[in-house]
Image 1 (tube, rainbow, N blue to C red):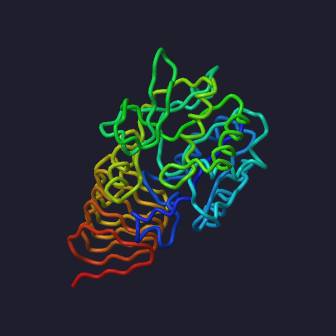
Image 2 (cartoon, rainbow, N blue to C red; image 1 turned 120 degrees about the vertical axis):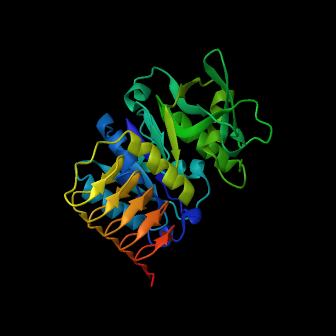
Image 3 (cartoon, one colour; image 1 turned 90 degrees about the vertical axis):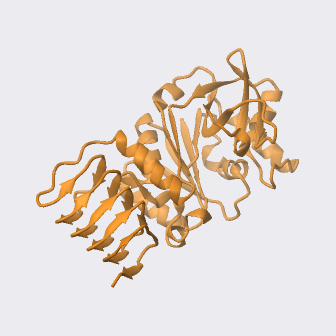
Length: 326
């Protein structure tokens, strides 16, 4: 099996954090977004993983090669973001081998049993019921089979959204379909959508079954990041007590963080090399190397190596910033 993870997005709604990091490396619930995905995909034993990168893609490559040195990973650069169909087409040289193909989008976190997905005897698409399906690709289902796919319909006939999880028993059909929509210039919202390529396959008789997803977490903007952090921490491991400080679970505190005379939690993620002194931090994500002193932070995102001194604030602070309240 080949695994493809498109992770070339810029993440404009997550600025200032994405001025210095690609979205896939943003920290949430104890690790970067890309690690949440890879930690679920790697145990499946794919012959290789193909990561599609773009904006600051070299940082993703550096991180993945260091964190997952045992895994064979090919990196494909998507210079111009022209849709997921276009991204998949770029992987043809390394992924169009006739093996089963697992595609997991790199800008959301999906929590489900991927072993059950790849054990299916038919092609499957991950779906979840949503309140407003107009923002997504939508699947129409009858008799346990997907009969039609529509990308971002204005008048959806179903509330089953495609969540960005695709499994095909033979990837060659998908590669032929994405090449066809590109050659015929079939676009939706000026992009080559994988939804349109899959619909082409369905229209020609390829069968797909829906696979209901347990949990699907958005990481598209700061409020969504904090919500994802809260939900994922609920199911995470417990953090041991810290002498001289109070820890209110659920939290994720990296072993390399220094916590002194502080109250941490609930719903807090603190990365490696962070220093938290004489502070209260709740419902927040503190990225690697940040320092918080004499402060109360709530519902805050603090970037890597940022320095916060004093104050009672809600912050959205990018990397290497320095804020002092007097």
